[in-house]
Length: 355
Image (cartoon, rainbow, N blue to C red; front, side, top):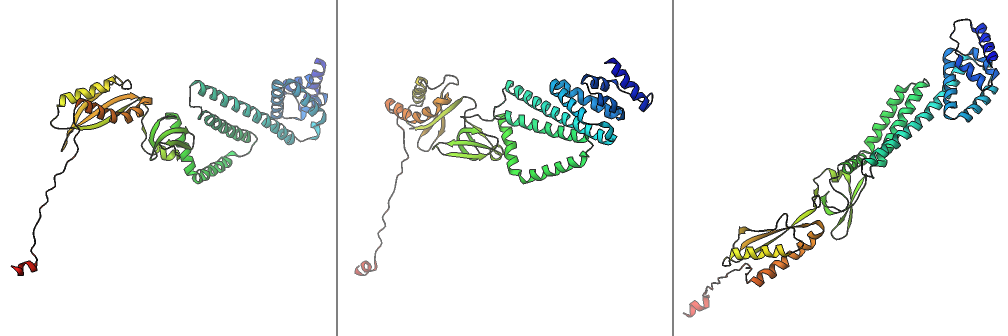
């Protein structure tokens, strides 16, 4: 093997002259794969072509040893480099290395995208958003790899990038509404002003959140109707979340007569709230005088409850307030009107003549 290597080197020195920068790596590679024809013809290759060929052999053999050896064996046996011009060989090797680099770039892009997906899962990012972010990164990396490989092959990329940018701008203007919904969907999923199951006022509707997607938000109204709202309309207006804090306040107003014992009425209603198991002790329930009306003293009751108990409590409180006041003998006045009817006797002409 050493004798063959020295013979190849001497033959190449005689053809190219001393001091032309002969690379031994490609000769060793050719001896390893047993291609004597390549050794006799590689002297026709310039230094850059030898470097590209060496890199191609190393990449192919390094990533897939056995297929790389077989491919290089078949390629070198059937390709006579002496019959090709330097430009053709250079272009062929550049294309080969470009394909290898593109495949390697796709593999690295997939690895980077999958690594980001695992990081997002560990960070407990919303599962709806993870595939979108992963695919966005993967697409951007593929475009970067494609532009880099085309630049390596000598294709002018400035005009290509300008054309892609113009096409992206045209598509963005055509899909302005959809992209706005998509952008708001990403923001709603990231910042989470509400979650699935919350009761919210959003987009002009009040209902329970059933689903949040990248384009729409689905609400179930109180009468079981389903409304699908574009995310741009949801995010572009005020959002009221009734369940964000976990507790809600039930409120009832009632009036008592001016002649009733006010302190006793306040105490009776407060004891009624404290005795209800659904009413929380912190914040404590309260009963206070809200206003002095025309025919009654208006009282307001506040009672805090858990989210699951709020609606039943809110529905039950008016009935319990009425029953409690009736049992205590405290009247609830209602508006009364006094009507004064005056009769005017109008004398007719016949009566006047009779007189």
